[in-house]
Image (cartoon, rainbow, N blue to C red; front, side, top):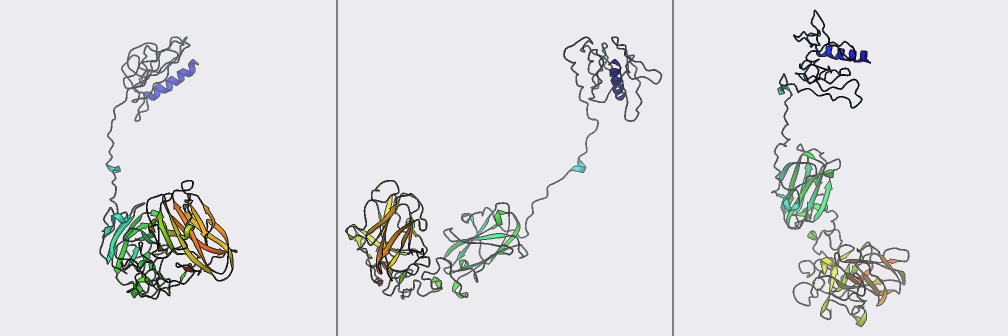
Length: 511
């Protein structure tokens, strides 16, 4: 074991006493040097073992000296080496010993090897060759976009014709506001600065009240609102409209050009199929271009309800999906619920011929019956009726079947409802729910002729709506079903205006 330790100490001392330029040991003046001169090699002897060790010189800064034999651990060398463990001596050379080692007969913890002092750096690192700088962010030529403009409420006002130049970071949206005249149009194209596509972008068009009109994406081409082919870019109401652009999936766009133009006569374009809400009578001619919007035979210039039919020649029908769009409504009413938050009141609107006697301008206990019409499938009572919750309405209408009929009355209501046909209760639903298509279906067996459908709709809060249609026993919807608001007879309202306010009873909230 002594020979092994001697060899280890010798190797470490020789390493410590050499330099990169001269691998030979360096000579010192100390009598106890572990680094020999060229003439002699003086080595200290461990008295307890008799092993001869080569002497060490001054090591590199921070090196750890070799571990000595079973003697004490030496003191810290002057330049940071740990001594090799001689049992005596106070010099600070590489082979000097301290007095903190352990005896060869010790059986306790191994010695603690102190670390050397930290050497001072000899050179200063020149970092000039590794210096770098961040390039300034790219700015598209002609950039004129002004932030913040991320929503229709913050849209940047521009005057067409106008080319908006901008860029989009991840998640960014840029909005531009333009003024449009009644029956106006918008032409807008999002492209690269060179007019080519991509970038892949989406353009959204918002009405003056910031409701979305339409959103068009450029999949493999430019995102474009083209009034020659897009009905949503035509027949616009007067006011400030907003165009917003964004990358598809809100991805970044390095640069873009949004070319915007507007005009004031949508009827000057070739005829295309009008969009939702643009053709009240469904004749294929947009209302702005139609002299008789509701198709009742009374020209708009003299019609006191230009969007709702109200002449003796008016023919009302269920729409192409079978939904009934014309109703007489009584309410809002504030009745005590029968049981639960969303269940309608126990009151029956058929009692005392309340519903049977319904007609334009007639009232029940001071509440008038009035006409409401929906352009779609669902009757939105929250918008058309209003009033604080909880609340209820009675809605009634007449429909005609041309032969004996077996089928169902299909109703969806928000919230609870009860349903009658010809004064007979078919059933109800007390649930708190949204108005879903055909949510409840009630069997009916009807004779040929006119029949009255009455629905009591309760609202506990939030949305308030209903929808209804007739289906045969095979589930086929009855589209084009004749509808009347005057009982089992043809339509009789001929521009009636009971209060003389110039608004026909058919479209007057308070006739």
